[in-house]
Image (cartoon, rainbow, N blue to C red; front, side, top):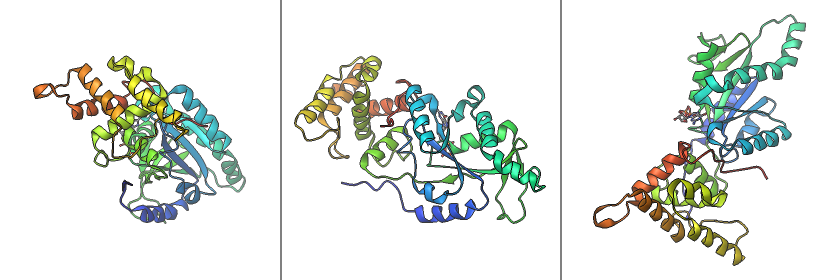
Length: 311
Ligand code: GDP
């Protein structure tokens, strides 16, 4: 069964973004470093064509450093400017300062040509776009807090729209462009649900937790084994059985998205047992176990884990 992940406001958003593009020099797209593909909406390629493009791999603190470096390389080869950032700990990691320097570099040719024509100090205008929960507000607050002041409405700009002045060089539109992720396949939906990009009401926690266990065990069984002191052999075994049967090249493809695999459910039960999450009669509280597992993954307690990597 296919799941309806999102209501359909996409057309409206797209139209709104298109009208704003006329004001913008650079489009800064925020992605989740753990799932840079699933957290991208490819519509932005059409909406922002002809614009300078920066891909920020946010939440880099939660992603594998090595895999993030590979994504940077990957996106550079595609012609994007890119930087890993951590909007939540910007002071330490200096993401906004790096971005400001990068924007200056990107826009140098335009600024110089403007100077030649006698237009000095026309600031670079940028806008941040991204899917819900990717960290847009957090990042904008950091940019505003670092050096920004909210500037008054500019003539010719729709009432109510404001620009945040970042240093002397660039102005940022204070409201981000919200894009919806694109669900090419259900796996994309699962990854978005695992990272918390989409509502927890779409998939029940237990089912989501079993998908997360399957993904993590596929990446490295030690992630689960070390933290919860359980063995993942049954789940790993189920995966290789699928492989040997020749039905799938991909390891750990869950069957129906709404039907947790037996092996993953067993592993979830083992984790609940190891944590002592028992209800009356000794039954393992799977709901509680699922919530803990998902929260610990999202909070980085299982380590820095990327769920997608470039081919
Ligand atoms: P928005 O919907 O895109 O505006 O996302 P928010 O700015 O509201 O951020 C969503 C959640 O992600 C919040 O709980 C933030 O604290 C968290 N968050 C944002 N950026 C980062 C980051 O770089 N690292 C981590 N660990 N969490 C972040």
